[in-house]
Length: 210
Ligand SMILES: [Cu+2]
Figure 1 (cartoon, rainbow, N blue to C red):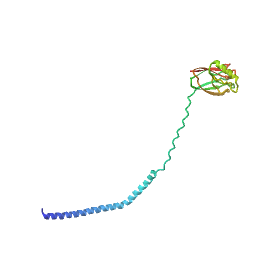
Figure 2: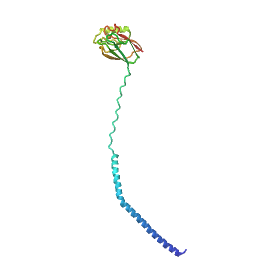
Figure 3: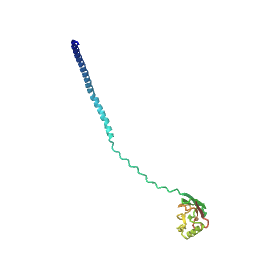
């Protein structure tokens, strides 16, 4: 190999390296300048960014720790509503004007079911009562006799275990009363008014229980 060429090449390489080095230094310097410019330009922007970040962070941190909201009061468990009584069988009976009779001489209810019998005394002045006895006309006659022997204050209603249901006392004309009772076993039962003389005049009827 030609040593001259080698020398020349080395010299050339050296020169190239120098140029390259100078160029590299320039590039580095340029980069450094850019970095410096960027650094100079950044602070403001960076600060703003930080301020903004803080500004944003504040409300976030405020909402991040919200005051503990009061625990909602446990919904009160509604008191169990009283179980409605099974609907009683509504029965209506009344009197017409001054007649000593019931307007219904026959009624019917279901055995063992509650009955709500409303007695409407349509009379203007005459008082009446309503009794249901465990038996037929024979029992009704005896209960009626015992009733007459009692007092007006008692409503002419005797103490008799054969009475299944009854009005509290006399029901004045124009008044009404609802008598509730449980229908007895299937069969027929006589109801009557024990106001003196009314039963004899036919103030009675038959309740059929099925
Ligand atoms: Cu009567």
